[in-house]
Length: 434
Ligand code: NSS
Image 1 (cartoon, rainbow, N blue to C red):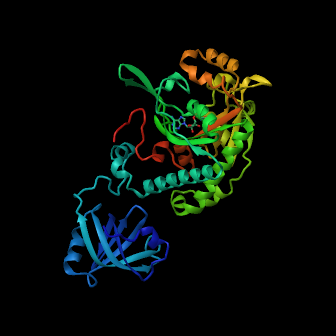
Image 2: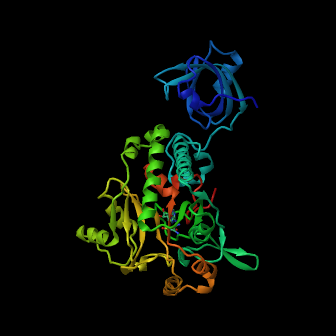
Image 3: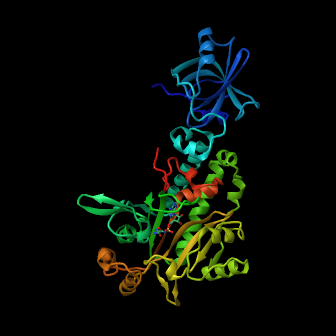
């Protein structure tokens, strides 16, 4: 097909007074007298097109009168600057071709719909301006992440999705039939990443992870995208430094390149530009003290839940680390602190404004006996982890890593109320359609 001009190019102001052809979907329409105002969407943005009776052929004007929302079309016309038009530009049409006339009654109309209705019609709701913006910010976030990781010497590595042993505990494992036996869906690439650092050095992945989360919350999906990093010759402080530099790069890049989308979502790009390393660091012990001082009853040894995290996030105006979680609150691979073995060399990064945990990670155990102790302490079967234990026999090295929840981070950056809107087709305990 012949190429068309993208709406984003027109909105950037480079096409004023030029003849253009755009292709897109009729997002909505109003008419007054001898003029139809179309809002057309092409995936890069939306623009107003005016179709005036005296500027187009009669059959085109009549077709414009009858056209339904979501019909696909090609419009030719001249670009004009117009402050009254959304985005500041409009196309004064001289011709229009309808490619597909949509059926009447597009289900996702402009009126209010409840969340369940919108989730049932997700395949259509992703066309909404709100979802377009979120999905573009999400893509921008991953683009920036890859840029930073590639520029800083990390190699992309892919771990399997079908696995045979848990990384983050059995409670959230999805079991799948695997021929005559059973397999699981991966919760994290981590164990395989620890193998791959001896092959490739510093590595990362951006891939789906799966957790059979049995509770309904605003921050859990059963399938989420996981940006994970693993680094040899790295300790807890080293991995926190990587996390804060990477996240800062992502936030600044979004502020610069996705400003219009962010503003429309209610996020001021300036909020993101203000965030710079170092991020504050508090220990788990300090977090517990803060909570107790606030009258929140919380017992040392438990993992922080969202109520506790929310409380803590109100005390910071930028992301902050909570470090040194008790070994009882963390998975078996976390290295106990040699100076205080009841806590681990772990760190979660919490986003401010009530959002809470967006990354989890820390330093791994490099000594074989310490690892075997932790495996047994967690009632796991060393047989299931034979190959993982092998890594401590051949070329063991201090190493650390983390996993960032892509949707949690998108939810915070875009100020979303619920994690489900940070992904096009959310998978939740009660939803796997569409
Ligand atoms: O369980 S984590 O805290 N850590 C790991 O999986 C490590 N094995 C990662 C690593 O070191 N390579 O999960 C990491 C992040 C967590 O901070 C959340 O942001 C996100 O993954 N996460 C989730 N997002 C959405 N939904 C669910 N259910 C979920 N679980 C974790």
